[in-house]
Length: 284
Image (cartoon, rainbow, N blue to C red; front, top):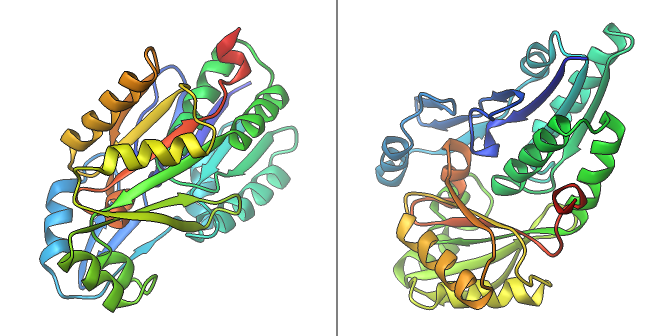
């Protein structure tokens, strides 16, 4: 059986070793410019354009045909999307999967609304690839990933909210206040895939301690952590160092935001996935 993992590009990676993987690019729009979130995107250039432009900006998700094209030829498909509360990607993917399975009797498919973005989606895909290579059945894999999703949390810190304001997600007055006062907004993804602010601080100085405190309040006790940053490797390393100082032996990995996540996190932002318990297949 030909197994494939397919995701929209908010997963923050364009390839995945050891498995057939497809990333469907989102698009970031700024005035008349269009940035395609694929492997060729110059993220730093995009961020610079967005930070200096006064044009209205927004994003565009993959359509049904984009998803179906990515499914073509696969017998077992695991699709992972950004939260359905943040994008129409899940809806398009779900419709595409229904059509594909009707047109391909005998094929299996499952669409995960990750209820998150970025590092959460990446870790789900990596775990799926591991389980596939361990010989786990498709149905068992889905059960394990559902279990993982119940025990994983997304937390992030934003240094700017300009793009959220330009996209109509927050009032422009709030975004301007955040920039002028040098405030960092700390938020978590809730169980419904919505963004919930939980704290704030000025500058990056105390930010790692506040983030770890919020993680511990949500049952983090030394399990796996993945950090994606938007052009801020220094902050990501400081967060990793604090986690590993507090929980020696903690597995903390760092990646970079691609186009879609960089659009919302903006320069300096970090997005963190953490588990309150390890996935069973990893413990065996």
